[in-house]
Length: 519
Image (cartoon, rainbow, N blue to C red; front, side):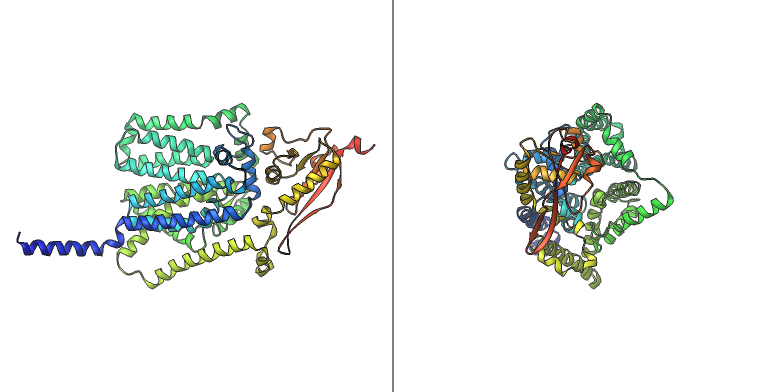
């Protein structure tokens, strides 16, 4: 080759490198790192400037009673908060675990998108999952989904690795990951079916069905979940009864139709009304391409069966929560990243596509900023039309006033005697009173339904102890129905105001055994 030809080829190579720089993965990794750092900093800001809500306090209360499992959920969320609160029991350290889990989850989302398609696809997937409200809230609030999300992603990464590589230990790592994910939330069992479906449907994965290590992975998963199984066996399977009997509503065509409608509409808020249609479109494309592309086959099998199962569960129960379907959307963010990456690679995106992406990003930034501003200044809620605001559904109302409530309870307990205890009617409110007061006086929860308090001997207050019974604007069951053996008289209410806005009113009643009250 002549020197001129070599120079010409070198110039062409440099031009090619310059042209492909937009897809050169170190650049997109740097952008991903910046996004993860920025979003983590925002979560830290929220955790540091707001208090825990009732639901978070319920899981925090579990950590005060270490156990192999719990009534509502497996133990990982309680173990996590127990660990982080060794440093401090403040609200911020309660949320350190979810914030760390969110950062790991974000990194794994980018990594899966990068490995399956491109670094740019991984970055787009990361952006998509960051702006989804359900993932945003669970990225700082204490909840079982916070440890579940990174473990779910790790399982998908293991499956993607098994598709391409042959290390014998990969199925064992996958099994351990699924088992630990089951300790976070029971829906992780769906990863078993995703694994089996993909191993059967994928020509490149079927080789694992003939290898002993694939079944060792199942054994590893079974060993990992033994704490939950042992806890339930010892107590007569209360968790199974809760989720498959006690929470199930009467099934009829009208009930199913009503629940299905509300479950479907309920997806719009948690998964962004603008982004959700794109995710569902990506699902359709993934299913179509799964016929010939093994990458989309994995994404399709990890999404639509999971969504279908969780949606059917939401239709059957009385109290579904719209965020249950979160894990089913994770693979669709990867698919969305791949499709947008393809669109950008074909040249300048259309004006409509650019406008759509801008609307998704801008609306998310405005919404997150507005929610944070509302958390810091209750006066802003006056700008919300009354028909769009429900104080009972405002989580910020649950985060305030417990210092004032604890002070009132301490004063009332001192007047009634050293053996006075506190009680309330709803498990999350009971837990919030317990954690905010450090369980002094001791807190009991004689609620209308069975809760975790039943399993730690905190359901029924001591027979002869005076009881301070607490209700609020949202939870106000009649004390006479929950404690019929006692007579109660109302004390002064505790009104909680912030910036001139009434946030919550707590009503305390003094309850004494009936025979003492009659004297």
